[in-house]
Length: 193
Ligand SMILES: CC(C)(COP(=O)(O)OP(=O)(O)OC[C@H]1O[C@@H](n2cnc3c(N)ncnc32)[C@H](O)[C@@H]1OP(=O)(O)O)[C@@H](O)C(=O)NCCC(=O)NCCS
Image (cartoon, rainbow, N blue to C red):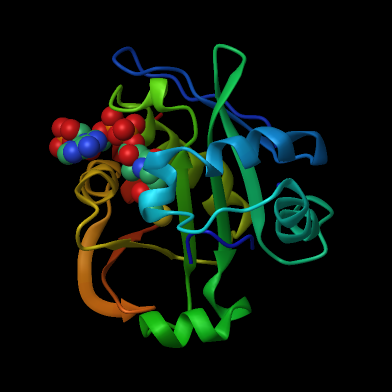
């Protein structure tokens, strides 16, 4: 469910890892979110059509105002936001749940906004830290997390594998061949502190 919208401050720390923190998305973040959606690496797999600031505000406003059940956050390093992550209960989005063949658990979407932050281990650190410190605690009764990527999205598939997800099955979304990956609550423990 990348590219559609669906909240705590946190730190992750491991000697070999960058310290990533998270904060809920706010309305003041919409301009930077809009700028990120125009980045070629985000347009390729996450947000395939161009979006205006007004469209971003309309799409992500309900999550910011907690008018819908999902959560949405910025990941931050050294005081600078570098990535967006969102999480939602599959049961709250039945059309999505039917598409991936799942009726429980949570799903996560993410992207790194500023290309200067790509390929530095931050995607893996953000994803595992988000699951451990934000998503699983927030959805405290859910035992499994899912993430879906296009089969061609090697970076995302490797990032999710590195964060503890395992491939489950393929499916099709809007004509694209997708891979559904899953992890059990606790699997992310081995990946972050
Ligand atoms: C997917 C994404 C978050 C990965 O973030 P990242 O910080 O660059 O990834 P990391 O540096 O943490 O690397 C994690 C793994 O992915 C691999 N990887 C990252 N970018 C890669 C690329 N372009 N090609 C091949 N492998 C890549 C790394 O080598 C590493 O693999 P390893 O652990 O097996 O050594 C980032 O590429 C992105 O935001 N892409 C656009 C949005 C997107 O596709 N989101 C997913 C859809 S929900």
